[in-house]
Amino acid sequence: MILKTNGFIKIAVIFFITPFIVAACSNTSNIKEKGTTAKQQYSKGFTVTSYNNKKEITIFNPDDSTNVLGQFTLVGNDYKGELKQNQIKVPCQRIICLSSTQLAYLIELDALDNVAGINSSRYLFNQEIKTKIREGKILKVGKEGVFNTEVIAAINPDVIFVSPFKSGGYDALQNLGIPLVPMAAYSEQLPLGRAEWIKFMALFVGKEHKADSLFNNIASQYNQLKELTANVENRPTVISGKMKGGSWYVAGGNSFLAHLFKDAGADYIIKNNNKVAVPMDYESVYAIGHNADYWRMLTSSPKGFNKKSINDEDRRYTDFKAYKTGNILICNLREIPYREESCIKPHILLADYIHHFHNNLLPNHKPQYWTKINE
Picture 1 (cartoon, rainbow, N blue to C red):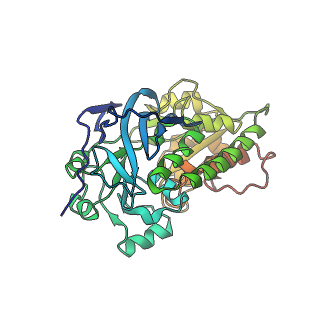
Picture 2: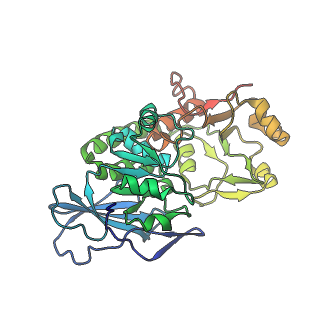
Picture 3: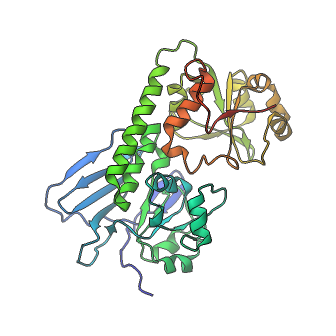
């Protein structure tokens, strides 16, 4: 079987405590022509430099713009020369996505015909993807650490989108000679920054104009909703998460979630400058959050998850004010396509929160992701 000959960078990028070998090295150092570089309006994770017949994309860690995660050059499918290191022909015809977040952008772009492989179909809601899996048009390639390299080789993909924040199995993928493009959307702090990665994905499927139109509409709606709460006087306090594996992972005060709460006119109880979630013990969370007005809880539980279910998980939860008042906002991953939609629907997330925190501002909104828990 003939596989692609694209090479890979051989330096290790360290993020948090996890080593990740980025499948990219710059072959653009010899490019002499001038290009036009476009930075995104909200996203800090990528730039695009356009030349006459190609585009160079540079991917950064959104938390540190000096940390380049990868650099690739996109050329048209009419390119006749031999592909050099980290050059990719676009539009890509055979894409492998290793997370539902990546799929979300392609779903929105109506580009699922370009997807040939995914990591898992567990909790997958999109019917078009399910149909393509049944028909053998999309293959499951395994997860980090247990990738089925034979299936991946059979797909012979143009590109594999990977997370630079996970480890396990990427070494095996590198040996296949397929470009591994790190996608860092999940680390964006601004909700619109995460959504703006639709422009990044559009570059690989030839739908840049559609992405611009979609994103402009999302940003317009988000900012209009944000304006509704700009001057609210009563800002309810909010806590998020629950115990998992002996720890309560608390989103930082400068995280994606914190920005959403602020824009929805709420007061998030965590006041630090952390951008990521950190583990805390129950007692520490209780001390600062037991009197919060609202409690946001993401779960993956059997249908019918309710206040009794919370009580059954941990009786200590019943001491929280939000439990007693019933102001618990729940999203059950087994019932709601949160993973495969939310990154590109920040305006809907914001509307859901505003509806709950300030019902008088959006009384007729029907929550799509976050609903108040049943008794």
